[in-house]
Image 1 (cartoon, one colour):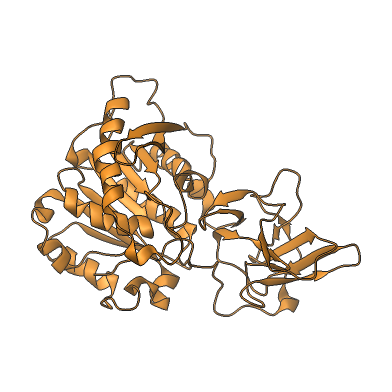
Image 2 (cartoon, rainbow, N blue to C red; image 1 turned 90 degrees about the vertical axis):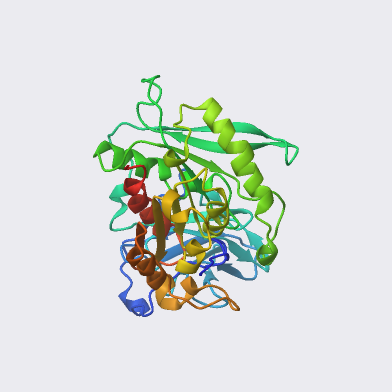
Length: 386
């Protein structure tokens, strides 16, 4: 079996293996779509290069963590006016990337960019335009709603937060009930990730508008029950979160939203650490979940499913996905000390054994949100088809 537990924060923005020389950089830079209102930098060009500019007249050294360059980032050069500017040595993968600035050894967010919760902190974000961005674009189609709820959690002694996507038409037709996908974020992220970085609501709106998926509810909550920090994930105990999800959140959603409250109409999926949680929780609760999705978060082997009573009868779909750069780089085969098996082979073995097993590869992406946006686009149409 392959377990992806390293999470979303551990993988830096990736670059192609070979980048054109700096002289080939096209000077058609435009402000990132994720800039603060009115801010001109950072900028992205048509090739995927990123250019930074920061005003720090008293600084001695400034570096952005995106791109290549010294110490794994882009080194900025000081100008006479006190500004610092630098361009990444190579283009970045298409899609969303986290980053921050290092100024004289201190960590700071870029004042020009919007912030996204990503590395167990709020990080700056940038979007490199993707050639296939149409599937998560804002279009003139009916839109669903993402609402925030607070649900009681006796096991943690708190009220916890979840975001709930309800599809277009949910409010208008008070008699219709819907299936539910519980969708988990990665390590270092929180319950805002799938709406903010992942555009899950827009992906669903666009799929529903063209009839490619059945309308369903998506529930997104925080996947941790403690203040675990980087480096502690190997000892992470999923059981407390399993209690929150299965015993507290699912009953709350079924009692406060118009769901179809049965196992066949309920799915569980997640990216990276969320996939690790899904792989641990779903097989242990086959009375609750019938569709399972692991996005860069492990895979199921025949041994996994054979030792899980009822798996073949109760599970309607096993979906596994990775970015092609993860597969090429060996990241998908698990951390050191675990069996080194190919998730593609495991998925194929399940299919040959009669399971509904689907494997998807996001081309030219790594452990990053474009891989997971595309995964949701492919996963959603396969859900609740029976």
